[in-house]
Amino acid sequence: MKSISTKYILSLTSLLLLSAHPASAADIDVNQALSMNQQGALLLDVREVEEYNEIHAPNAMLIPLGQLSSRIQEISAYKNKPIAVMCRSGRRSEKAVHLLQEAGFLRVDNVTGGMLAWQKSGLKTDSSQYVQLMKRPPL
Image 1 (tube, helix red, strand yellow):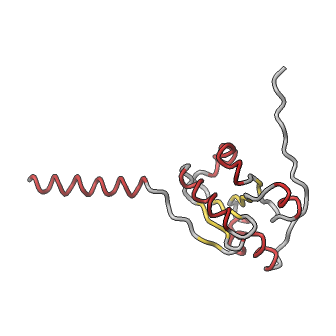
Image 2 (cartoon, rainbow, N blue to C red; image 1 turned 90 degrees about the horizontal axis):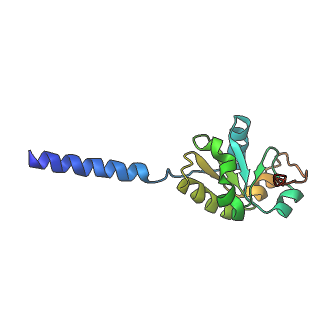
Image 3 (tube, rainbow, N blue to C red; image 1 turned 180 degrees about the vertical axis):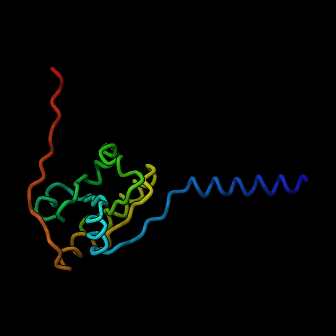
């Protein structure tokens, strides 16, 4: 009976450790990212404002990587929904994916090649300017 209890405890401990580890992210291409976005996934751009203003994917939400931790509540509705993260080439977005996973986001994918690949594929782009709304302090 003692060996069954030990096996049960070891199995349960292993299961808990696996469930606490963030889900692995997939590397997706720009066409998959576009398709996901068209089906309701968040397309998250983690480049800087200046880069975004030059060119970005339509419907992409901008939160620069350096601000992601402090602005993560803005995308909390996507905690259990798909998110495709992109940057210029895929390096910053890879960091963002890990940050989001550590924060408990379950369905986060990295867009391989980022905006460089998006442009190279001939997908539609936008150059509208990002305007950050500043909250006014209460009177």
